[in-house]
Length: 152
Image 1 (tube, one colour):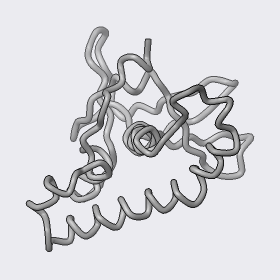
Image 2 (cartoon, one colour):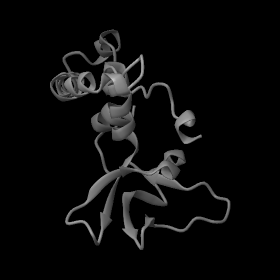
Image 3 (cartoon, helix red, strand yellow):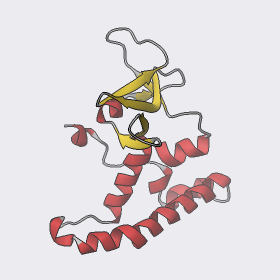
């Protein structure tokens, strides 16, 4: 049910079309979006496309193309959280489907940093939520261009 609830497109700068970028052409935001798009496409062409070709019989008739890779990248950037664990030497990123349903707020209950303890993901809350109250999270202290690029 979680996967069916995700949007068909995220509307971030990563998937912005050339016609949509006309409004920011020549601005630092426009340059940053173009650089990020080029980097993502280069990563796909260099690493992912050859991998998909090597296992194409396992992915069904449609396979996994550029548009799928772009969607998965936007999902990752928009929804991944940082997790720390006593078993890990450094923080790691993961997708926590329960947090997909949290909306952003400047006054959140939690943020994108969690930890694993006793085999369970624990979300750190920085303020209490009343029973039945919507829990909000923060994308972090990011400049507007990063919010547009990665969150839409």
